[in-house]
Image 1 (cartoon, rainbow, N blue to C red):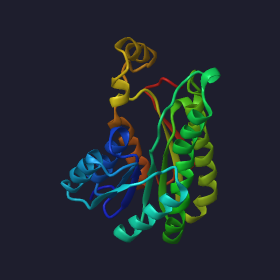
Image 2: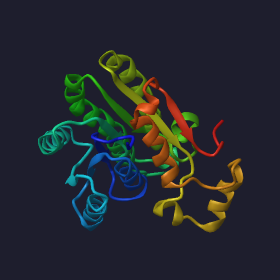
Image 3: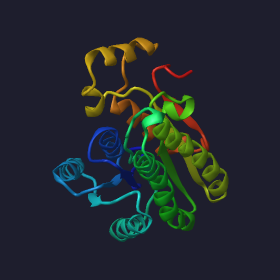
Image 4: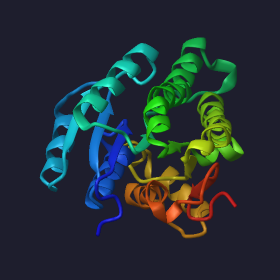
Length: 248
């Protein structure tokens, strides 16, 4: 029997990169998957089609994760279409990097809103569903820079550190109903975004990592699967670094 047979998962920001890898991994273990992204475009539709081809129920939704009312509306649609929600992966996120002395208010607000407020929005929306079910697993995508900070990423680091605090608080609050809340803190992950970096920068990152390579979206997806499944039934309120030993 597959690890997630009969489970319903929601993955935000899943049209590409880490979110897409997570959606595919959960589906490979039997979960039906609802994916969200800012727009229902060719990329989102392609992921939906790929998931459906795996033999699971899947649907993509356009969702502004930073908008509270829009998030509630989308979650209501998902519950109507799928009947329940067992797993929530809060993966939606953006970067607007820059030195603190030149960072604008718009850069700060956008990153905090998309990265941190979206976690509140979706968790708040699914909480009544999971509370009624007396169970669920919430997995929030933080970052190693949320643990240790990083120059020129004050907004991003603050948003990812906030996710850790939120995760630990939610775990203590919702654990009484069997709802687990954990976070993953990826390090340098090879995605389309990092592939666009100059080769010398990518090389310098790899030299800082004890395993001497960047991680893959599948590396993050594998840990997400663990936290989504009953293999982690007694894991709650934790932050798991997926960084090849970069942040120890």
